[in-house]
Structures are given as structure tokens and as C-alpha cells.
Image (cartoon, rainbow, N blue to C red):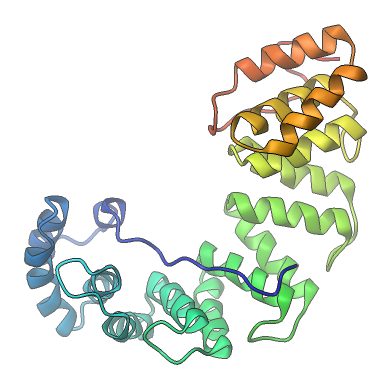
Length: 280
């Protein structure tokens, strides 16, 4: 795996605000201001709450400094507020702080501190932190390289439906890296990712059905998966789909095309060998 990788902080989205269970004076006004894109007003409401120790307000103020909403953008101030919330146990703040230490944003870069914050959140079930830990244990960044530990964290994230973690864990199973080698397990986890619309997983699963690795060989399903991955922008999938025309039967190709036509671009799909098309 490449020794460098990128991490992204959680965005300050309307979904975050709408999902909050908090309903009290100041917070509700801040939420309403955020929904109307009046970020200056939102900051005026959230900042006093944050200063008084409200953990969710501290996280939001950190995100607003991070993104420059209602205030001048400042990674330093963002990190300060994330840390206040993180020390109170806010998992999203712990994750964002881990990203900032990994990238040296507003703090001195420290892979060790980054890993420590990810670990705190991951142990509490934070899926993005679990995925991040899988990556850093894979390459040994801030921690000792350990394929078994990496696999453990990838699996935990995969079990929470993180589609990228599902594909990576499938690849780990195929290679036997930190876990017993199993093509069947590889196919199972790759399929979970593919069903969420992940084109890279769809491409990988198409190869498995074409070659009969971990699954029963099925040219029709392979054609359909190559086709939908190609529609989503996977160039190699188009080439391998067309190569199937030379080895698959006309009936298999027709079935594959019909199935692919029922799958919406970049959307979740259902992959079943026992489907209404009676694929052979």
C-alpha cells in the first residue's frame, strides 16, 4: 500500500444539526440560523454555549472555524475547540482532531497523537476512526505496522457498513493479510461493498464471477457488474466487459445486459445468483 494517504474531516452539514437530540435555548436558535445559512448568527448562538462547556456546541464551533463559516477560517481555533469537545468524549471531535494531527492543521503534526485520538473514538465504535486505524496500522504511521490489528479495525468498520472498509477487508481476506486466506470471505465482503454502489467493488466482484473465485462462475453476473462499474466511470471495467463477449454465450450476455439495465447508476443494488432472471 502507498505510504501516503489522505484523511477527510467530517463536514459541517445540515444532517449533523438535524440529527442532534439537543433542544434548548441558544442551541435551537443556532440550529435555525445554520439552516437558513446565517452563519454569523449561528456562531453568536453556539459560541456562548461552547464557552459554558456544552460539548456539541464546542464541536460545532470547531467545525465553523475549520470551514470558515460565520468566522474567519482558522485551523488553530478549530483544533482548540475540537480538543475541548474531544476531552469530553465527543467522538466526531476526536476523529477530526486525529485528522488535524495527521495533516498538521492548526497543531504540530504528530502521527502518534493522530493515532491516539483515532483509537479513542474507534474503541467507542466511531466507524471513520476505525477505518482510519485500519489504514495507519497497514502502513505503520504513528503505530507499529501490524496486519492483524489493521484487519481487526477494517472488519469493525466493515461490519458497520463502511463500503470502503468492506472492499479493503475483502482484499485482505483474498490475500490472507492478517487473517486466514479465504476467497469465499473475500467475495462476501466485496459483494457487500458492491451492493452499496461502490464501483471498485463492483469491478472486483465482476472479476470473481468471471473467474469463479469465491463464488460460482457466472458470466452473466460478471457482465452486469462490469457494465454498471463502467457506467460509473471505471475504465478498465468497460474493457473487461467487452472482453467477455468473446467467451460468454449470447444468452449470458443478454441476461447480463438485462440485469445491468435494472441497476441504477451509482445506486445500491441487490446481487443474487438466484434472481428472477434465472441466470446461468
